[in-house]
Structures are given as C-alpha cells and as structure tokens.
Image (cartoon, rainbow, N blue to C red; front, side, top):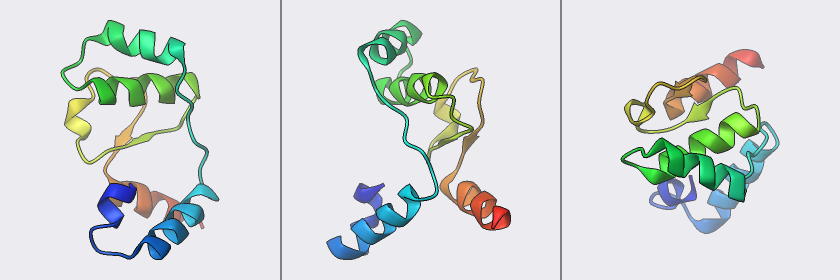
Length: 92
C-alpha cells in the first residue's frame, strides 16, 4: 500500500493514511506455516499465495488486491481497492 501511496503523496501523508486504515482493519500474520502452505499452492505469484494463506489463517473477511484474477479457486472474496473502500464507507 505504501508503495502505491508514495507515488503521489509525501511520507507523512502516507503514514497518516496507513494509520487511519489500521484503525479500521486487522492485519493478518505471516508465519512459517503460512509460508509452507503457500509453497504447496505452487501459484505463479508466490506473494499472492502468501497473502491468501495468511488471510485464511487469520480468518480474514477478504483480501484486497489490484490483481484479483491472480487468486485461483479461493475461499474468501478478493476485492479491488475501490471495492474495499466502497464497502467500508457503506458500513459507516
């Protein structure tokens, strides 16, 4: 997220945005078990496999990704960033 935000914002604004988001969501953990399960998936994008296994292990409601098509046969929703933002705005 910071990688995307820093393109058009200064570092102070990036940190404020991340802190604000952090107050609204939980963060999934990455452990050895998550890495092992991600390796077993053998997905083309290993980082996506890590995100998916981490989200499953943390019982996340969804994954936010700019490339939802990269998540193959998943058990939880994969949302585009704008879809996620719309969902949290409608919850408030």
